[in-house]
Length: 462
Ligand code: ARG
Image (cartoon, rainbow, N blue to C red):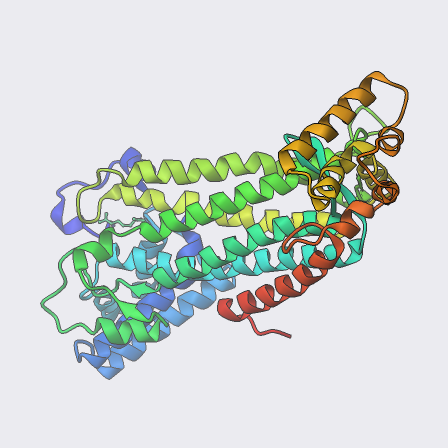
């Protein structure tokens, strides 16, 4: 029997039910639906719409259904259109006639979005935890990296040596912005829609504020039409996860490149890589590639869902049922990606001599040569030009750049210090830069930022 059977002279067509059901994918909301229903029933009790006995009977039936779901003994019926219908059906089976009072003053429209907000709050917290964990892995690896340096790249061309710790933490700071965004998204979704009814409220003396408080929401809705229509929190979370996915994709791409034989900067751990079915020698960075590949899917979820929302009239429309699959999938994929990438990075072996040899290539001293001249009063444009000419000359001669510079009267004898291995990162002094002294400070600041994120997110610092 459907929830609306009184209105129809015929039962529902099979294809209609098959097409419109969401039970296939909304069972993840079960525990949240039960929480929401218990709070709703308590509210009805407080308003004396239900007697104390009725309240107790329905709440205990809901609790039993929760235990059945948790214990995997809950049996779905073919007529269960969604998890909310299924739970109400089972409550009525357990509680008898009084179960039919559960839905008093409530619609599935406010019921589903309440459950989804409760889910979204937990999901955001779970993802924040995963991001903080990955940020911590990057911090640990930055510490392991000590004073190891490698070429920094622009246009994927060698540009200037930087500390490996600097390179790793660059990703860590981007992830820090993801955490900030997820925390503020979680604050905005902290609104209880229960009590909005189908769209316009109820003639019954409902207690939305009491229900909100019981569910741990800090606010209740201001406008019932908005309460049942609003899926901004889903779109926002999808954006947060899409951008986080883009960051993970960029980390993944770097690992793919750096672990290639051509670069040879990172060696992949056996447990965190895959082999080839045909080529016996292969070791592949599949986690890193999937982080790159799956970011496309996360972007798709955001774009698809915005298209679903666009042009919807107020208030609830069945289109809104399309909020669940993209959100659930984005959360699952992101949580798995965070764990896998963290493990991958934790197990990477740094090929120090390869990185440092690449960074010690003498052309990377060019900017230090120009700045050497600047320190002696040569205008920067002029210094840039002069060094550029020497680099060009070197390409046509057998002499090294160091020899050409040594033979050039515009440089003093001490210029040879610039060519010493690692000199560039030792000399780099500007705040936030990739040199040794500043990165040491950066690690302190990053750790402080991470501790602040943990506290803001509600994780205790142990
Ligand atoms: N499964 C539906 C959803 O997720 C439940 C709401 C159906 N409401 C309705 N008025 N038809 O949105």
